[in-house]
Image 1 (tube, rainbow, N blue to C red):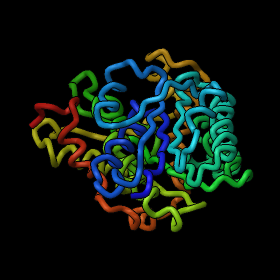
Image 2: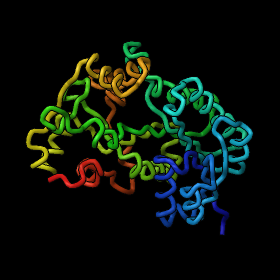
Image 3: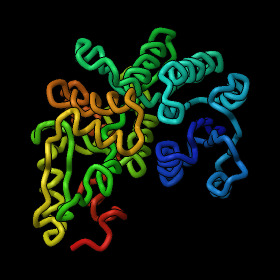
Length: 318
């Protein structure tokens, strides 16, 4: 029997990495093909111990430490790499982290690097929206990976469904109406994605169809939904609570003002505003179809209805 190929998963205890591990282990074919090495800062924590109990090798490594990453990638066949811009809110740091993973993957002879990427908004919008750093930094790393020639596929997560229940869609005063308030028109197409439930579905498909997806972007989203459709879905599921639910298109100052009240610095208020505002005219994925990315899946992605039904913030609603 051939030895299992080593799949290194960064952020093993996080949303995306954890979903990848779950999907690979729960599929008998991939579970028999891959041995998973989960990268985490602290293998002594309960989440890491739970992975070990499932047969995952957990390795302590700081994504900012090149020597630790080099050791973590030893003998790896495939790598799923994800970075967290929001931890330090530093684009240059995120680019440096991604480039280090790319360089060390090439050095280690990795056969398939799966990079969690996003579109280059500054380039897509011809400079109209130059401040969406958490997109552009990941896009810069994608460009670098292509430049140095690491065999790679680019996993492109959509807009997280988890942002909506109790966050972007919540009860607002004075009458506690459920309200979705965003700085975009109500017909803006938003590619919604269940990161915790579906990252693994897409990444497993990328792993098992390597030759077909090398060099490609895989757009990870269930479907495009407009703000109006999101509110209509809420109303359909929860007719009593949703009786007066509505979408409100906020302007730039209203949106940034709400973020300021939540303690968000000005720089990141602007970044998050532009993140929302570019979608209507330019498209989250540059208006690309999801069909080709859906065609590689073995499992259907989570529907918005299913996600809303199980969302804690909507628990008990009728």
